[in-house]
Length: 217
Image (cartoon, rainbow, N blue to C red; front, side, top):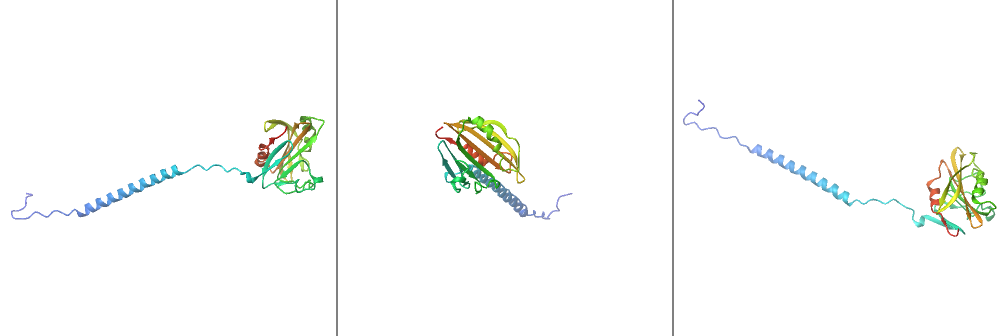
């Protein structure tokens, strides 16, 4: 049982060509997947190594205008306006007046979004008392202004200045104004800054204050 009859030939073995072809295809697919994964990893690593951090943009000297006066200097963005330069000398408010909108200095109720006005005058009072007596003028021209509050002194270029802050509203927007005073020689330097549409000074106004340099104080 189970043995072929004498003289009967055993059946020929089945060809295995299809099996080898299938194995070859699987091997090719594995090689291609390996190459694709390896190439992707190499690309990502080389891309990350080649990437350099982008430094933050800083205003160039050409984007700033420098103001130099008797006791101090400061810089402001070139997109702002020197309101004193375009006004009649009789209408000039202080020794320097700049704003981000071109508004005539004698237009007392059409107020720019951001402004910086600097006064220099003789005073029988020192800076602290000068600010205390004049801080009520900070909200002039607004629709509504709170009573000014005396805040901690600010420091400009190493010099401490008395400071007052007033908040209120104008044309339906919040507005904040601050006044700073410093004794310089026999005079008082008074700085009045305003930002409309916010309850804190804008970065542009703060940048102007940060650029302040005392030149002969």
